[in-house]
Image (cartoon, rainbow, N blue to C red; front, side, top):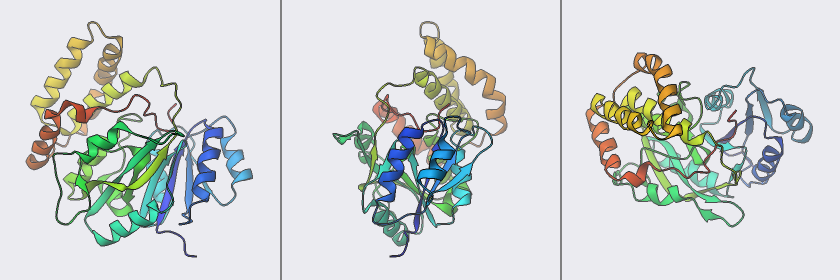
Length: 302
């Protein structure tokens, strides 16, 4: 049986046991995808475990923790035309990678496909599923599913050329709420970003959320605004965070870390074209569409 045209890239750091579970699930897939682990300088024996227990899995040993851009290093090292991202606690449902490949084959403008995510052993629907499925951006005649400007990184498939064209995950954000910026950059380059509920990913996150997650998420949301959104929007979001920082320690940390990174964000600023700024504003009007589940914690976070 031929291998799938969809490869799988996993960014990980110091989650050896969880990664082993994920690899077993992926290796059982009928599509037999090529699998590559991009290890963010783990110190828990992850590399030895992969080499010993999963010799059929490729290992990219990064010299330092690269954060979310480890996925880019992995994608560059894998040569399949389409690449699915998994975290070290997520995997793909049987048949989903085959379906994703067919959708990419049939829709040349499709750059990223967001899957429906089922959480935990009870396969509870991720709250983000309904947010994406109800996107007010609607459908395009040359794309499958509904158009979106957001997704869950551990539940998406990309066209390799589109991802590289857009620049991949931005190093300034490192990890946490990094998806929106990539969606903006893909759409700005003319690539379609859509949600397909028939493509399914399983996510088994640690039930104990990271204590720094709210601050990191708010920091990266504000940095994304300065990197791509209109100046009035970025200024308004900064003002809101400054007001919240007076009573919220997470907001205070997010504001402090944003200010430290703001010069780099301004140097890399590239405002969205007007039609995409209007689309982003339409999504802003529904405040629920910017929410992310509190357990969203991509593998490889330091």
